[in-house]
Image (cartoon, rainbow, N blue to C red; front, side, top):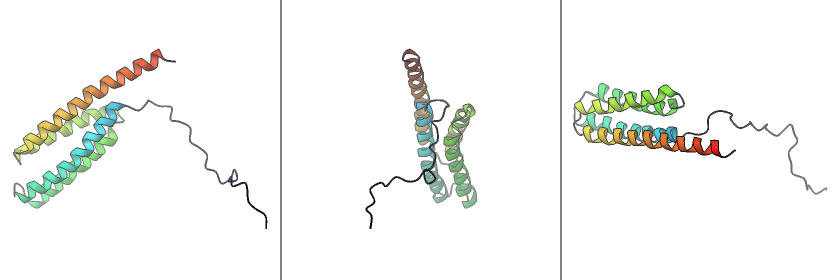
Amino acid sequence: MEAVTDIQPSPDEVEPQRPARAGRPPSVRRSLGSIVLGFESVVMFLAALVAFGLKALPALPALGGGALLCVALVAGAGLLRFRWGYVFGWVLQAAIIASAFLVPVMWIVGVLFVGLWTYCMVVGSRIDREKAAAAVVQP
């Protein structure tokens, strides 16, 4: 028996490596926005259960509307790759504030999340501008 010393796969077995994406560099604003929207989806799922449990709404509107909002929040995180995705994120923030008309404690949750969203948008944009300026200075 021969000893196998070379364990490299043949060229047919190797998957071709994809070239690096030649698009925009990763955005801090997009990353932070995705984190906020993802966390909001979890909180709004729990809020829908609270609305149902407190009998603020019947089962279908409470759970169905909560599920719809959760799906919209997760989709919004993915849509942040487009410029209009940020506008959609603001619309979702307004929907969360509007949920306070059904469950009053959501005013606190809504205000906290709008503040967090605003902070992430402002600071993320600033960091992205600083990164772009630094990239222009360094070749």
